[in-house]
Amino acid sequence: MNAARITIGFAATVIAAALHLAAAPAFAQAGAWKPEKNVEIIVGLTAGSSQDRGARAIQSIAQAKALLGVNMTVVNRVGGGGNIAWNYLATHSGDAHFVQIASPTILTNYIIGTTQHTHTEFTPLALLGNQYIGFAVRPDSPLKTLRDLADRLRADPASVSIGLNSLGSYLHMMCALSARSLGVDPKKLKLVIFQGAELMTAGLGGHVDAIATVSSNLLPHVQSGKLRMLGISAPRRLGGALAQTPTLKEQGVDVVLANWQGVFGPPKLGQAQVAYWDTVFGRIVKTDEWRRDQEQNLWESEYLNSADYARFLKTDYEQAKAIFIELGLARKDF
Image (cartoon, rainbow, N blue to C red; front, side, top):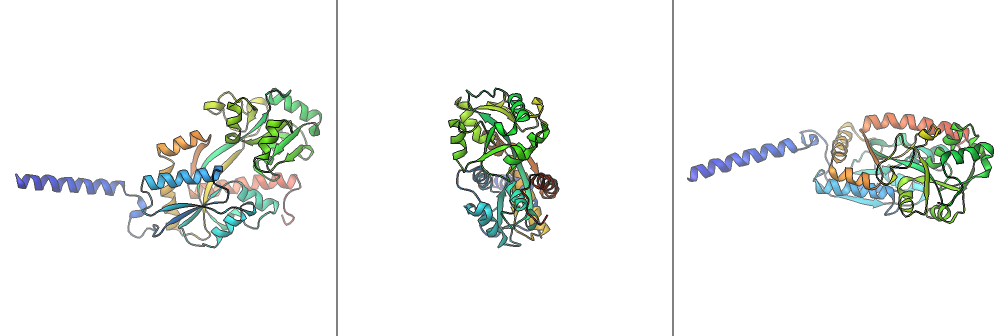
């Protein structure tokens, strides 16, 4: 009886050990890098922002799944149009215990000259997903469809005021590309800049004819009936509450543009460190928790590993640079 129990117990231990090894991440192999202390995931925007929500989803999944073997904390370093966060990341050259959530502003801010940091200084680790940009109006607006907006712009680009959060952003880029697709000079658009929540206040109050912003900002107001979306810059119609919103392309505006979210590491990370984060992010994006979070926040999950993300950034940067040179907003040393 005792011998049988010992045999069964030994077998169970062997099976458990085998399962643990099978589940162990690739970076647990001898000679691979892994973190030895707390990992910081840096966010350059305030708590509750889109970047912050993404960082906290990563943190929650990494902790719940014990992917790191150490703690991960979200650190908000806000200010300077994102420069404070990028300055902080730059001080940790070669240290893969620090990663930062990124958006296209890492490209556009350098292009228009509001920062000296460029994406090539840092180590690209992962593209995580895309969020698309919509045009929206008040329900009582005479602009019933995107074609109405297009007709007004073709007749007189300055006759329609469009609210944005900033010049030189991907929101601005979407407006410029849309104008170009319609045969309208993008420099003649009447763009009105509002800071933060002021943009939504302006749209809801009718202080501008239309606003352009990401879908998650628009969704609650669309659901409440206080705003109506004319179109969205996605390659296909989105699901859920925006399933009835047509894309720009299906309404004759040949533009697809994503306000993507990604992750960078500090400068000069080594191959083993990059491989570690490839494994971690590759696992996170396959979880049900990540899928639910993306759906809830109207993100389209699109994962690219470090090498593919680097190639993506090169193409995206060149497109943005060309647009802002055309608009006369690019830095003078290009």
